[in-house]
Length: 205
Ligand code: URA
Image (cartoon, rainbow, N blue to C red; front, side, top):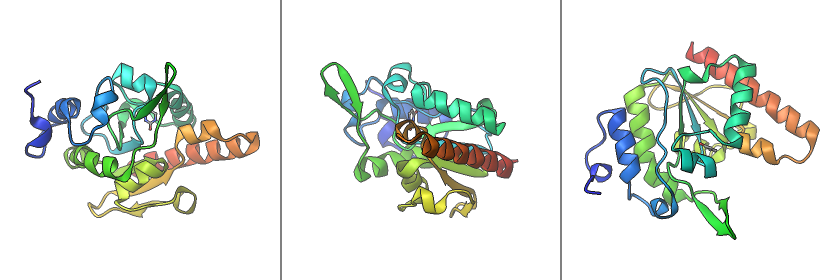
């Protein structure tokens, strides 16, 4: 492709972000991914929710949170009274990082360099949408949103001020919940995710 928008001036519209993400070469993750997955939602959304990176199904569909983690997210959002179609849903990293094990593509956590490279797009989304509230799901998103490590357990459940005057919150990533082996611990964390979604939606009010 001759589209070089990914390396040029900061994007001026969400359409430019979507096109730029697709052709982005700021790190190497594009090589093994099907496509870049930009955020989606209303351009005036008051709440932005940030995940880690697309998973296997998101990579194929080109949309965020449509696989197993997305289904759990949708269930938690429904319980919290949060209408997903009114929220900007995106990821800290826009390409699927994985390794092949046989025919299966196994998720790999993006490294600090990849998260930093992809902040170009996340920061553009924040600047263009100007959400009142940004909710980070999991540690990778929390680092991307706050610009420093922000442990979930110690920081969830309350709003933290962000430098651009929006309010930041962190909560558990749905994929983390899917991996909690103990059922009671899993139910507790799911309840906390619901609480945090409810709080974020209320603050975005
Ligand atoms: N996990 C994420 O963090 N984001 C997605 O879009 C899907 C799974």
